Length: 335
Image (tube, rainbow, N blue to C red):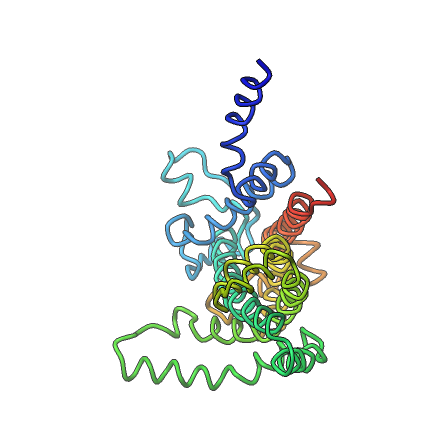
């Protein structure tokens, strides 16, 4: 009887054991109310930004001179079409442009820049250099870490400002050359120059922290028994790195990425605030915050600051809270 019960228990436990570490972590994550709310909010905000050309009720360039600095209003007597196309859910700005539409396009810029910067700088460059540095050690480790220390010796925001200010005209020249010599027309209008400049600036310092984190994890993991066993049976270097080492360092990488996304959102907004980020006519949350941050605007037209400020605050706060929840879920000491 005891044997039968034990067999049944093992069979019941088998589906759970087949689930991977990240699958079990995700199951624990969605049971956390704060994490679930943050994921829903980020999903809605990012959906609105990515699909802004189809979701936005107006064109972000359209100016209605009869509705300059109008407070938020909703049209309810002209059906669904009038409700969506004639309402100004977040008011209008100094040129009569719809603030809700411009916030959606500002979120779109933020999504593109932060995701591209994180994928290239934080993940591709940072994880790769951290793996190589921690696994091989010696002169390779010293060279990578010294380069990282040189970049880290500059204040992050100062380095980003210098790069963004110095690279813009050169990148603009490359984009103009592409428009003139290829079939790629309209790149300047789409803001490709600004995307490239800001992305390069964010990538320039975004890899350092990730590389150090991964290096520290690899230095610890490569002394583990299963790694020693794999090395003893002649496992190749790529297999050692991407099968035995990197999967075991995924948890802190996931937490760091979620935390860094909030920081990159803030840096992108600061660059636009300073005038070296996304340039007009493309909307930017930083530019909108700058235009609505004067004392007179705050007193008389507070919606100019409310809409972009709320979008930026929600994204930064949600990423930080999600990072805390991921740390609780993935850290074995807090389970």
